[in-house]
Amino acid sequence: GVRTFSLTAQEGTTSFAPATERGTQTETWGFDGAYLGPTLRAERGERVAVDVANELDETTSVHWHGMHLPPAMDGGPHQEIEPGGTWRPTWEVDQPGATLWYHPHPHGETEEHVYRGLAGMFILDDDATRAADLPSGYGVDDVPVIVQDKVFDDAGQLDLTDDGGEPGTLGGVVMANGTVGAYHEVTTERVRLRLLNGSTARTYTFGFPDRSFDLVASDGGLLEAPLERDQVRLAPGERAEIVVTMAAGETTRLASTETDLGSVAVPFAMGGNDAFDVLELRAADELTPSPEPAWEPSQHADGDALDAADATVTRTFELDERRINGERMDPGRIDEVATVGDTEIWEVRSTVPMPHSFHVHDVQFRVLSIDGGPPPEELVGRKDTVYLEPRRTYRLLMRFEDYSDDAVPYMYHCHMLRHEDEGMMGQFVVV
Ligand code: C2O
Ligand code: CU
Ligand code: CU
Image (cartoon, rainbow, N blue to C red; front, side, top):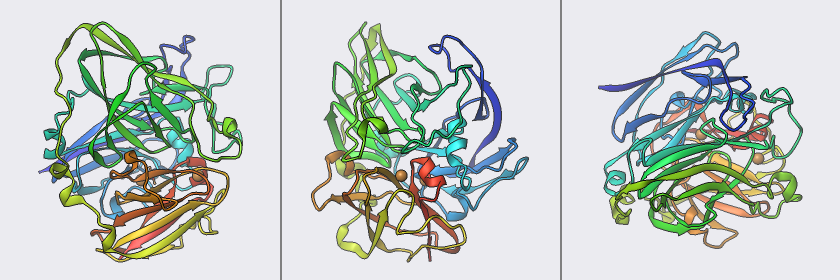
């Protein structure tokens, strides 16, 4: 059988209550609703199909961020859907359990479409993630947290003006799942939060004022082992799964604190000093016991491991303010040609005092090194997006397993979406 989903991109109005208090409705876009979209969920090995309909007045597309799939199903700028049009991609889920997401990717318009509200989570399950004993009651102790920042004008309307800022619009209002001042009522000792930085420009550092947490998964699935952390930095497009422990009756809050952006020119102007509350956790007076997360690396990593010794090709990508290797995106130009089955190393560097969030379609890569040294442990797992601190060289290991197609490219780009829209994107084919 084929697990079939449907998604309709549509207009609506949203108040982002409760904490905007004015409760003013503003125009937003969503999938199957006024803002954001449903969480899609599928199993490794399953064939899925999505009936996508575009009821907007503008051309859009839907890209499956983090998914390994044929390029014609990828939902990038070559699979745009006209107003009133439909699209039905189908593929077999062939990768470990992970927190992925979906969002539009129309040429030059991605920032606006995501900012207006088009995005959702796509969760993949498999035996290894189930065996890891993580909290897994969806919406109970396994909670999606899509974090986004917005600017509202004096009339309480979503402000879509390009403020010319770098690395894009930084909103002073931060929301979780489209709600300002969001809270979650915790009924178990441990709760798993699937954090997605769904913002267009802002990089966050998430943590709690009074406790550490277990970082259990990054973009592409489980880490080798849980890492105890006080905070985790997420650039636009990145995800992290964390497990936090609560005591009966207490309250804490997921917050974003000051962010180390690396050696950027003007950190405060890029939001490095900003702090926000994101999600309050309110524990009930009695909590159901939860298992401790526990797993053997071999349970999930073996079949999907990448080995640097297999790499036969090295490519270099130099990013300045808007260009990659001196070029802006041209949909008619193929920038890189990879051979199916090859393992490659991509050396990526921001050559200017500006950070970027580097994303590659189709693959989950591994960060081999940063400036020749080992990356921090939280970057050792499967990744599809990585924050590039300025003037540091990131070596990424990836393999182009299958799906050769010389006619339809995949994208690589900066996930700070104004950068992407203004040309910081390239195209590769796998042949
Ligand atoms: Cu999340 Cu090419 O995008
Ligand atoms: Cu993507
Ligand atoms: Cu960028």
